Structure formats: structure tokens, C-alpha cells
Image 1 (spheres, rainbow, N blue to C red):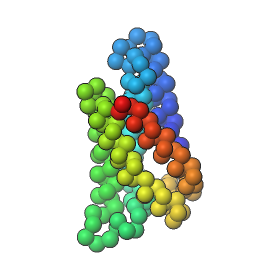
Image 2 (cartoon, rainbow, N blue to C red):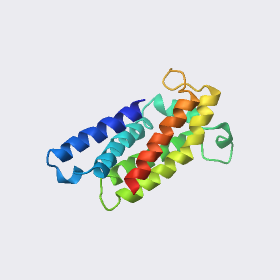
Image 3 (tube, rainbow, N blue to C red):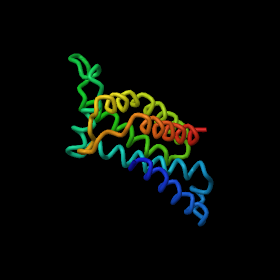
Length: 151
């Protein structure tokens, strides 16, 4: 739920700043890009926090954790770097549409890990996994926001 809170709060605050006179945030699309940047900063940082890394690695589907493939921790590192890089690029007007489109594709590519984690009952920070229907709705909202920010 933290990513949704970060997205909504970041977007609302950015929009209010735009209304208050910050030209770079004047409009819904720039505010949405800022909200996505906040969300991906939050989600990207946890990829590197002790404890969180192991939990995220446990979400990797077993089919991707076979010998000869990158290890789950490497995949967690790569996705964390992509999320943080995308968050920064969302704040660069010329790069923002491409970053948003790339992040939408990244979220679509990572969704199977969410499905696998929900089906296998993988906890995150000791909490039960988010039920698959709710995960699916949240992922659709996040991807939809990224697509809207890309257009």
C-alpha cells in the first residue's frame, strides 16, 4: 500500500505546488510524473535495504532462480537501479515520456513475480502477501499512471 500512498500523495503535493506557482509542476501530467518519481524512489530504495532485499528476492519465481540464470538478488538489484533511474528521468522533461513508458514496461515485466509471490504465500516484511486480486488492481493503477504520464 505504501507505493499507492506515495503515488497519490506525491501527485497531490506536486499539483498543489503547480497551482501555487511552480511552473514545472503546472499541470496534471507534470504532477503525475512527480508522483511516480516519488513512488519509484520509495520502491527503488527498498531494493537495497537489508531484510527487504531478501524478501524481494524470495518473490522471484522459482523458474527464474535456476542455475545459469541471474540470481534473484541480482534481479532485485537490476530492478532497483531501473526504478531509481526511472524516478530521476521522470523529472527531466525531455526524458520523462520515455522514462514513464519504460517504467510501465518494467512493471508489466515484474508482475509475474507479484503473481508468483501471492500464489506461493511469500510474506513481505513478515506480513502476509497482498491477495492476488488486489495486487492486480494496484498494478493496473500503477501501469495506467505510467502510461498516462508517458502520453
